[in-house]
Length: 427
Image (cartoon, rainbow, N blue to C red; front, side):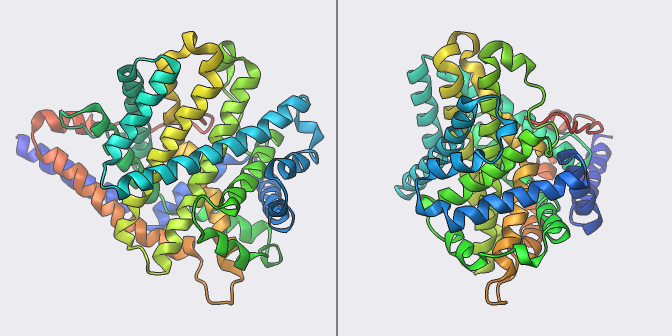
């Protein structure tokens, strides 16, 4: 009887994951995300025109002056969205500091791995350092992060397949479990290639080829090291456009649901926390395009993209922790404490990723549009190729877990219920 049940589960998994390879399924996911992200067609148009204006002005003017000076000048063009001068300045500084911190973590992680040290060791050291600085219990903090990633992955499975799947972890060290969850999250991110087509499609609908200028310059920046001023500058510029669009209300509910957080850290702090989330989502989309471009050039195999993406997920998770700790714990540590770890799940779930994917699609279109008529658009062709390989890998992982026995199968499958992806549940 158990063998029949296991066989049924395996066959159902095959069907679910094979459906994910179909254009129809991915297009439906893209439409769902698009409708959840934008209030209407005018909002879509305004969002991408604003992002495009920020990016073009950065390439023309911003990279030739201090980035904070340029970003604050751009924000001056939208006086209606700021409560006061301080909010405008703090928003600009938050975007810049978040990208700077992310870059530091990306570079440090790469150096750590080049010394043949493990990603688990790097993550644990960051957790310990943060715990010491803010007088937190490192085990409690690490457990909060692990729980948040677990929930995010389950929700992501729900969005992609319509079923909530919880993969159990072996009985091993907590940091090893968390890194496995981060790696799975990277895979789930790559599986939804339809999400990454949203930006590309909307650009073609609302902007047109005349707005896809600076492709060759952007491509050079795309292929530069992560810690170059211009690589950081592009992410800061695009984040500025995204934040303005969110403040305008074109990106739906980006600043909704802050009530509970406001009671602890105040309105200004809760808003800045969302700015951090939006900025890291943009960085996620930019990282996608960098990876797809490497595949397109033949310097990275499609099968190896997930491992590279996992590095970004870990760096993003650490950055989010550090930035939230700096924002919340210096004044409110006693109230939040190790619970700060729960904030990392927002970016790892489907909604947190959707905005980054849409922005990534836009950037991929911009890079690939007008470069000697020879460059293939990375998102359009490469994202699907990468996704197909990752879908097979994750499918095999789930099937292996199911086949290990009755108890494991029940924990893994959870009789899987219908996913309810709440478009308002942003972060």
